[in-house]
Amino acid sequence: MFFVIIMITLMIGITFWSMSVQREMNDIDVARASEDLIINEVQFVSTPEKKVAINVTNKGSVGVLIVAAWVIDITPGQPEIHFRSDLTELPDYARDGGVPLAPGRTVVIYVPFDWVSGHVYNVKLVTQRGRVFIYANAQAP
Image 1 (cartoon, rainbow, N blue to C red):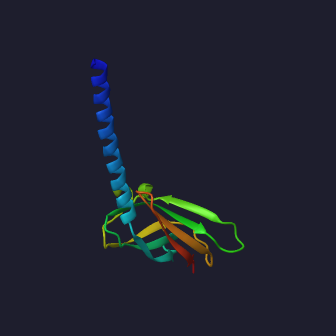
Image 2 (cartoon, rainbow, N blue to C red):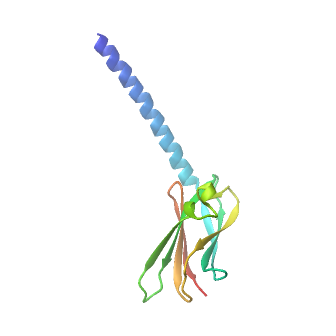
Image 3 (cartoon, rainbow, N blue to C red):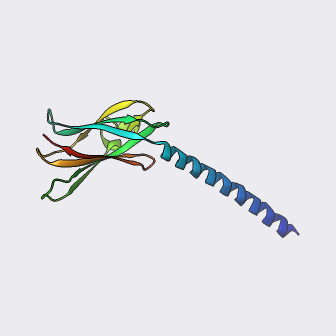
């Protein structure tokens, strides 16, 4: 009898724990689905050092933390080169652990990158929740 009471107690505890974890994961999925970034423009800056300026707006209903940027050289006839910048390690963004962006706000993110004039690039931004937003076919001057 004592064994049955222990088993029932354990099963109830596991059931409540499982429901709590499922609810938490569902909340994360809802927040991830609510992320909506628009990359408005990509510019290639050459002074004082080469970098990519990414103008991005948060059109979603939740705040977003942008943690990484990818710049991919897709120039025809050239090898495809992938460059990843961890924004959490750049001095301008390290304090916040990336680039925080509240709903409705716009920010310009500067990513150091040695771009080549005339080349074509895809730019991707990655959020803390794992969403990826793409700006295709940005051409360096």
